[in-house]
Image (tube, rainbow, N blue to C red; front, top):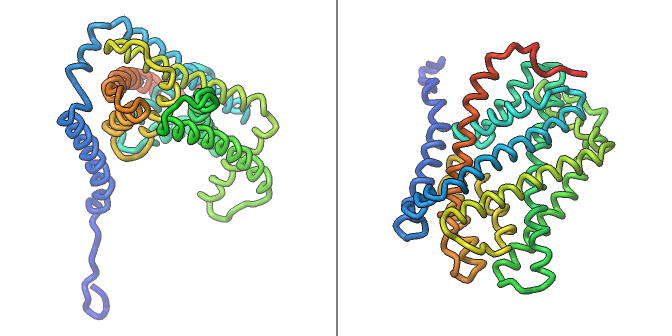
Length: 339
């Protein structure tokens, strides 16, 4: 009540938590609506997806490749950490990479995994937590750049020969432009990060962010490290393409055309959009349309193949629960130190 007798509307703590949950419910509703629509239109065939179990050797090989992929990502992050003089062994970076994958899967936000990685790194290297956060952000950026580079390199021969339809040509050009823009943008960030060395914001949070941003400048002096980290990311996405090929083979799709090397990275890029939990529904629709458009309607298996691929990767990411249980019980002195 104010001094004029006008009641003040109070916001309860419960009300303040409504919006995030509504956003989560909306994302689940979008995923359910997309899956339902595709099932009714015949774009997605769950019976066909289930038939992949009869070719379990393909699925088992996908599992092994996925763990190799996670190992590459962990190794890439360890390179970035060491460049900041933050020493984390491969055992730690692999565990945290698996934990990150788990929380990306089970939390509403697509950055839930990064938040968990930041939390554990901060616990063990509090005095270098800003620099550690910078490595996590840079790891994400290099991952996106690696994805675009794989798609662009696969698109170049097709664009040079001019043997693609208009849809595939546009996608190829988009991949090349995205890769070039990514390289230029990353180079600009390194230069800008170096040029702001004397700026020190008064706000504590802004000071932390500025410190993380300025830490990028040190990578400018380590071009070989950046190339190596980017190459590791590219190999990781090539492995994603191999997994997609195996998923298609498990569904009885033979002679997958080379254009899938362009389409798989672009399809995976759409799943990063915060429209549904873990890209469920969005990925199926994206792959269905990508393969349909670039084959003039001939290939209708995009959603089914991606569902098999997604099911295997989800199973691997869920195994991060065991790493979470074991890692949280480890003493802090057993991991992460600043050199």
